[in-house]
Length: 513
Ligand code: HXC
Image (cartoon, protein in one colour):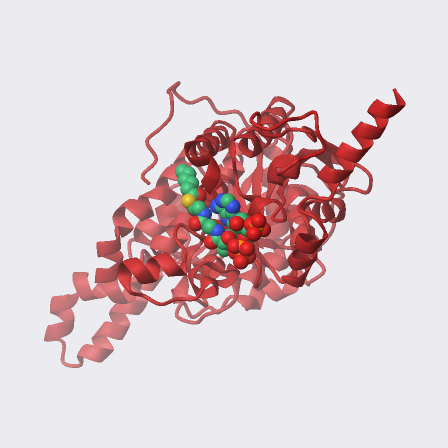
């Protein structure tokens, strides 16, 4: 027995040491922790339980202490995050660059299956050179097995990808299939082909950072949703995100004790300029309405003409969507259509009510937008809100023009309640654009065309650009004082707690991707 226990201990130690002291040192020199150090920092102390510690390639002899790839380059298991069960993997770059071979993939698939069966979030810490070249097609099959599970588990359990090193080739597609991607400044990269291949194929010269670093994917491509300055901050952000999410699609999001906003509601009466052409920061509005004035943005640096994120209202987690007047005047464009629709669909999967703040002049006009397919991208917002069956409340702050008024969750798309501030202007289009079309002749003929134009604009605004036409049709449930917005939202969301909506049975819809 003693001999066997000794063998067990020695074998375990080899695996715990990963790629050995030299490679661990190299990992640290790059500003990165090892897989096991990361799990220790991330999970509740002492909660990690490893699954598949001794897995190794079937081609290798398991009766010796010769373990060519300890742990197959990935540590898998489960543990707790703030007391809640999560399943995890952490790729070990010190072992064959964290490259993914057959057994490496099998270990990941096992914890993915356990996460789905047990209704717990699944979190992957990626740090890998991609498909293990020596294992050829077996590595590719491994990726396929992971992609399949990412897809089947989508909308069942939250799936989170943490990028803490390189992620090349097929390795970027599992993260792309998950709900949220976190990146760390200066150490994480994502690209389907690296700078050398790009130079050889297209002649373009680009650094890894510029091609696929945290800034690029958070600001330009939108592939990543969160950016952290280091690994520690990254783990804190993930914990914060999870605090708003249920463990699976059959649970409600965790509730917290209600807390008043720390910023005064009285400011709301003046934060939004009455002049519809003046900009302001909608985040300041949101902060004066939500618990603790705490708004956790998703995709904060991407498509900044819209803001989306999580907050609490009277302790209940909500997903917030808002037009950002101080960026592109809050117009809806291709990128923000992706941002909004993806967020709405996530919240709908996981029983998180939607609160939409509307101040939108329309879809962004232009050749670039039309050629880029704003029609099909813009349709995503219509689809996502129409598809959603969670409680939905919209608040129209100021402009709500044309198709964008509908897109930002008008009653017709499924909002359960719509409130408008007295400053709301709900119309087919803005006054300037409208009178150029319907009063063009009168303006041209007038003795003083400019004076005529101004009069027509103010007449239009008085007649149509207000909340009362929509309210008279019942499409706005109430016109409210801005200061009372939180109170109205609390009552409305409370009344929708048991909302149930039945839709026609189908395999799935055909989302306009
Ligand atoms: C096997 C690999 C590997 C890989 C790295 N290593 N990538 N081994 N397969 N894909 C090994 C190295 O040989 C080295 O082993 C160790 O990991 C560390 O790698 P270094 O190159 O020394 O590290 P670094 O300089 O930090 O560079 C990291 C890297 C680079 C940028 C990731 O290694 C690299 O470019 N790797 C290849 C990336 C790639 O093209 N992957 C295939 C993508 S195709 P030793 O023993 O010396 O420590 C793909 C298809 C999937 O993924 C499709 C699915 C649909």
